[in-house]
Image 1: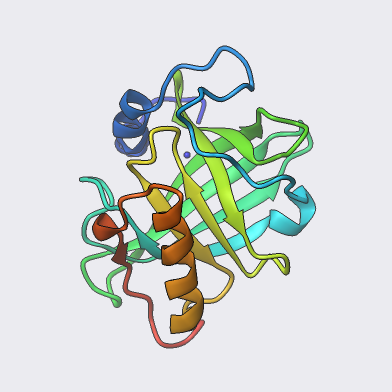
Image 2: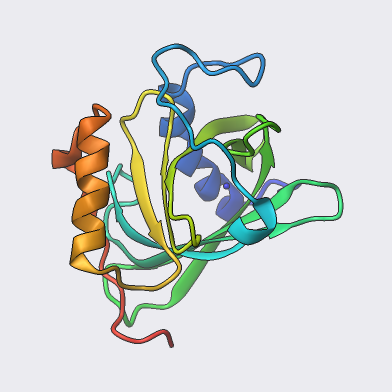
Length: 188
């Protein structure tokens, strides 16, 4: 995932168009029977902060994006800022941001959110795998067509990545479409 309309926000809003059209409408926090199961519980304060995009199923707005990350911050109103940072094409391109808002839908698990980059479009964000130490996370949408593998570090050990891919495959995800996202060698 902006109260006023601008060309930048319109572009950011396009980020959710394919997501909004893919996700099933949900009137409540109960997921459809075909949606993947989320993790049992997410400690929101521990989940806040920056998550680097290690890999994803790219769609047209994320293709060519490198050094991408999501930053989540709690707000006084109980919602969360969702800032998507990226560079386009090369690691030395200027950094850009899309700013959105997120909120928890399933307050029992805190693992189902709504994300909004432009009003009134939202998409459902499901946390389906999470490291007990909050060092990596896997997020998807209800139809499983889009997946993001996130990490607190710009790089993930190959064994951890392969374990995540194996679990996704066992849960019925099409892992052949997941692509690694280039990240710079340093944190800087």
